[in-house]
Length: 353
Image (cartoon, rainbow, N blue to C red):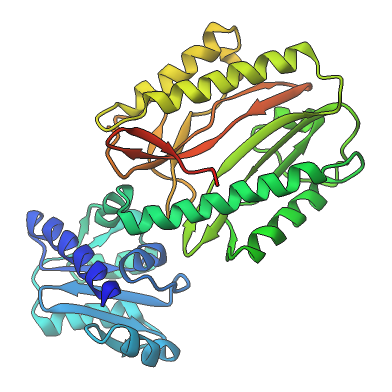
C-alpha cells in the first residue's frame, strides 16, 4: 500500500505538468524514469508506459506480465515482446487521446520518429525535474548508499600496502560493497597512485603502489537503485611533500566552504564560486579543472549541478556533490568529495556512517 501511495503521488505530480502543457497523455520509455515511477528496474527497451487521465498502461515483455499484475494491480499490463512504441500509439488512438507528449531529450531516433509521425508532441523532461528533489524515502536510501561507500573507505584504507595494484584495490572495494548489499558500482571505480592522481578521471590500471606517493580514490555504489559518490586523497608513506600537504589543506578548505554555501535558495553557481575562490586565492585556480559538483540520485550525474555556468537555484531535497580538486600535471593531485543533501538548515553530508 505504501508503494502504491508513492506511485500515485508521482503520477499526480506528472499529471500537473501534463495539465499545464495541455497534454492528455504521456509516454515514458526511459528505464531510469520508469524505475523512478514504479520502483521496478526494466532494461532499456523492454517497456513503454502510457500515462493518461484514465490510468497507466504498461507495454512490456511477456515474462514481466504476471509479476507486474501482482505488484501493480492498479496498472494495466499488456504483454508485448516487440513494437512496444507502436502498441502505445495504437492504445492512445483507442483511448481517443488528442495530445500525447514524449520526452524527446531521452527518446531514441526510431521511437521518436514513430511518435512524431503519430502526432505526439515533444514535452519537457517532467520526470527529470521531479527527480531533482528527493523525498524522505529517497533520502533514506541515499544515506544508506553513501554509508556503504564511507564504510568501504574505512575498510580499504588500512589495507593499502606498497606493491598492491590499482586494479586489486578496486576489486576489493567492489566486493566489499556488494557484500554490504550494493547491486553495482555507481560508475567505474577510480583508483589512482602517484602521478595518476593528477588525472581527475584516471582509468584504473595495473599500476602498483610505491613507497611515498599520492593516493586518490573516487567511487560509489548503487543501493536499492540509488547512487553514492565520494572521493578521498592522502599520502602513502612518511615523507609527505610540503606542496602536497599545502594543496590537500587548500582543497579541504574549499570543500568545507562549498558545503557551507549550500542552502535552499542559494544559486548553485555561487556555491561553485565560493569554493573555487579558495583555490584561486591560494594560487592554484588553473589546476582546478572541473565543476564543483553534480546532482546524484538514480543516476550518478543528475541536475542540479554546482558549476560556473548553471542558473540552478538549490532547493530542499536536492542531493549534490561538493568535490573540489587541484591537479599538478605529472606530479600529483588531490580531490576531496562529499555527497550532500540540501535541508532547511543548509547541507547535510551523506558520506558518513
